[in-house]
Image 1 (spheres, rainbow, N blue to C red):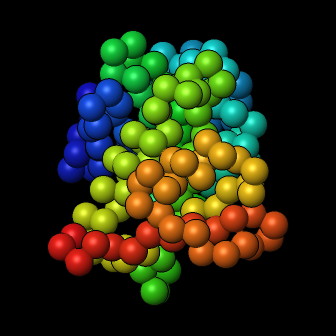
Image 2: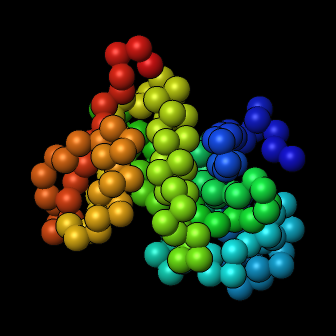
Length: 175
């Protein structure tokens, strides 16, 4: 389904991660879920995408395949061929090799390890890129689930920024 020469693809034990194609982002913006489903090649969980993703769909819609890799990635449950979450970056790496990661899981698929597995997959992909050396993440101070996901994926607390807890993970020496 996915041409890895054009689009990156990550496989975890239960999930497939792939960048959201620009045309599918446009379809989601227009409320054309059937068209988005067709373009993605997977069903969409009834409660996906979450509202916070809608703010970045216009940027993803305009992204080239190489730029899309530093935006929204779909999280597809391989068993049901359904998009159940998203994970991704807040843009390409800066000159210092830093990226910021974020994620959200549809309410109907939370507390099943989806976020942790998706973050692990994308972190592994990121550290396979020569221009990424540090990954940051932020979450609300009382979001115990996100804190567990980040800490479980090797992130360490790195202060507070804009009222949100900040976490960091550096490229392992062998990566």
